Image (cartoon, rainbow, N blue to C red; front, side, top):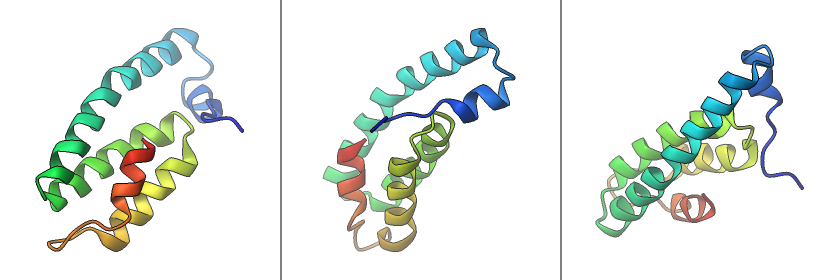
Length: 96
């Protein structure tokens, strides 16, 4: 099973390989920051901030065609994130 599907990225860039490469490089620059923030917010109980970080990550995941993980983040964020915890979001961020 493929982890990414770049067909959406190819479509929105009209197949421009330079732009596609830039977007992929940007994604790889963002991932460590997302992971660091997910870990920090989860460990410190900042669940609303964790939900906001997941929301930011979703668009990057969508552009990269990582639809399954994007949906997991969306579902977990929509259903379980609030003042008392993030429930399944912890599972989604570990997948990231």
